Length: 73
Image (cartoon, rainbow, N blue to C red; front, side, top):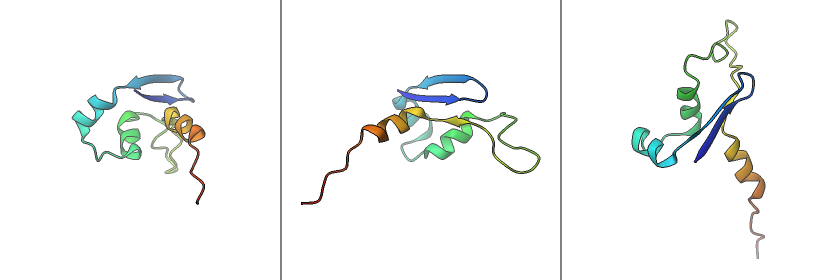
């Protein structure tokens, strides 16, 4: 499962990884998936051109925190 949430909007949910691959293909990048998940968000396209949408994938941050690179030998 891939967690997705938007802190400013208070929305959150889980996406099935296999279903996403089936729907969008294995080459779908998370930046593109984020844009699809946030479609219609008023904060995505502000009048000043800034993207203030808070949609993200907390599971990716959690995975990076437990990742420990191997030390070179």
